[in-house]
Length: 401
Image (cartoon, rainbow, N blue to C red):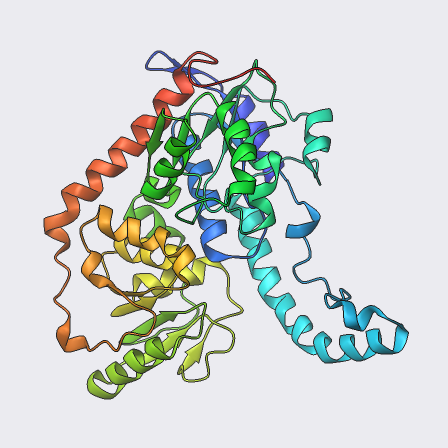
C-alpha cells in the first residue's frame, strides 16, 4: 500500500482496543539498502505494529554512506578519480554491470513502495533529524545490524535515536551488534547513546553481554522481526519467478568452496537443481540475483534444502520449516547465526567455513520437537514490544541529554 494512502487510512481509524491506546510510531533501520534480509525485517516490524493497531512508518533515512547503491556515475576508487581519462576508463568498465543491476533496483523499489510506508521527507544525517523531528509518540530503532560498528551505521548516532528528545518514548527492538565484542574506542559512544533509551532489546545473546559489560543491565533478548509474522503471512507475500522442481537453494555471501562442494554433491546424488541468488555463482543451474524479496521468500519456501551463510536465509528456513545447512562466515560476524541456532536447539546444523559436509551425516530437523521453543521466543518477543510501548517515559536507564 502506498505511503500516502496508508497514513490517510490509519489516521481516520485511530482508536482504543482492549483498553490500549494505539500510538503513532516511527522506526529507523538501514532503509532502502537493497538487501533481502534488511527489507524483509523492516517490513515485518512495521506490519506487526500495524496488526497491533498502531500507525507505523519507517523514517526515510538515507545517509550518504548507505545511499550510493546503483549510482551509475559513482567512481568509488580514488586512483580513478585523478582525471577525466581515468574516470572514463573506470565508468566504461563498470557501467554495463550497473545498468543490468538497475533491474534489481526496480524489483526492490517495487517491494518498498508496496510494503514499506515511509516518511515523505528524506533525511541525510542525525542533525537533520534533530532539527526537523518527524512527529510520533514512540520511536523504535531496529532491527538488523544497525549497531554493527564495523560499518558506519554502528557509529551513526541516528541509529541510537539520538535525535529523539527525552519527552518521547525511545525503544530498541532486536538491534544487532553482529559481533562478540566492541572495540575500546567505540564503547563510550555506545554506552552514552544506548543509555538514553527507555527500553532496550537486542537480537543476540552477545548483544546482551556487550551492553551488560558497559554497565547497562536492563536488556532483553528478542527475535528478529521476521519471526513476528507467521509462516502463512510470509507465504502469502512469496511470489514465484518460475516453476521449479526439486532444488537446493544457495545463498552464499562469500562464494565459499565448501558450500559449492556440498551443493554439487547433492546435485550428483539426488538430482536436485542448484538455485542461487548470488551474482557470481557460476555453478548454479539458475540464478535469480536480479529478483526482489518476494522471489527470495518463494525460493526458500519451496526448496528441498537451504544452504546459506546468511542470517535471514536461515531465519526464513526455520519459519518455513526447511532442511537448512549453515556455514560460518568470518569469525567476527558469526555470532548472529550461532546465537539463533543455539536458541532453537539446532546448532548441529552450523559448520565451519572450510568444513567438508556430507548429506548422509545430517539428521532430518524435527521441527515438531522444537516448535514449542520457537513459539515461546516469539511470544516473549511480542510481549516485550507490547509492554515497551505501554510503559511510561524514562522508566529505564534514560539519562538527560
